Image (cartoon, rainbow, N blue to C red):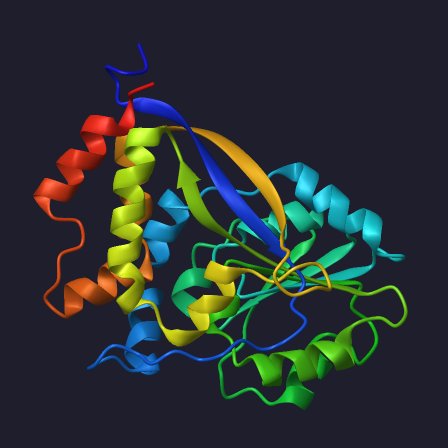
Length: 267
């Protein structure tokens, strides 16, 4: 009985996007610095591995069908390699990079995936050398990580690395969880309350950017069966929840958790 087990089918709305421009910046909450935000994110490495949902194989097949060659892919901000493994099913080699050694320590092995630690101090030329030179990468993927990037710097590097013609840059993120009307209302209230703890560039994930066109992201529904405990772990892995906690704000108070749980298994 799914209801008794607090288990239900969730639907993650996943905005698939190729970034084509910059978004306006928002002010950060008082007391937050980008360095503090990023440090909090890096501390969640093991929780990310346990709590974050994977992406459907159909998405990787669609991306692979759009590139003219399948020799080399670069998964940027790979974390534990969730996206890298999916990409590796279609490309001869995937170089999966991250600025966090902690995240990479949980990297899932695959014969065609090479995990590489790339500290923020690495120069653009060093990154190009890592990929074997310019105009060599068939697919660049960024899965729920673009909000941490220095976008002008990243775009410049991507332009040098992508194969021309035929190379593709794909950026995506999940930004909503749908269970049932009652739960969705509670979840939305929690989401809105967390907005002040998102850093400015998270707007790229929240608003979405379309495939070559602003404001019209390609959407994909990811259906998952989850225990409520799994969903709660997912929430606890999010940067806004942890940043709020560091500032003395408990977004997941006992009252909020009970309200979420009570509506979780209802049809």
